[in-house]
Each structure stands twice: as structure tokens, then as C-alpha cells.
Length: 66
Image (tube, rainbow, N blue to C red; front, side, top):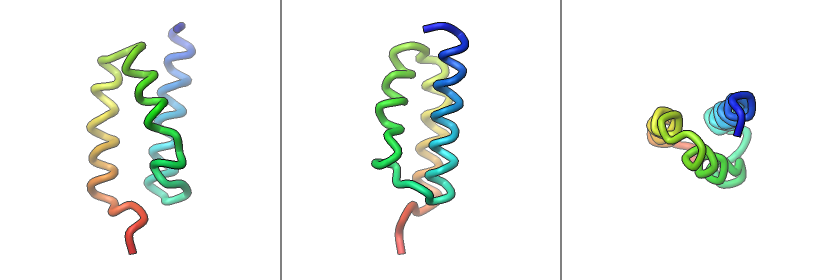
């Protein structure tokens, strides 16, 4: 994977995280899990940087709870 493709993948993941945060889409429907798995295979350091942010987002926002 080229550097450009890697940056694009990171941008897509971050956009999906924003969509989840603003409750436009559920984490399951966003498909972010498969993107994170792809990122882990390609660049584990970046994956380990993004994953805690994602986990914190899910923990603090009470996503889709009444």
C-alpha cells in the first residue's frame, strides 16, 4: 500500500469516527471495524494510535442510547 493510499484510509476512518460521534451512523453500519483491521495489517503503529481514540469515542458518547 502506498503512502497516499494509507493517508486516504486514515482519512476515511477518521470521517467515519466523526459520523459515529455525530450519530449519523451506528458503529456497526459504518463498517469501521473492517477498515481498522485493514489498517492494522498495513501500519500497526497508526492503528495503535487511532484505536484508543475510537474506544474513547464509544465509551464517552453513549452512542445511540436513549
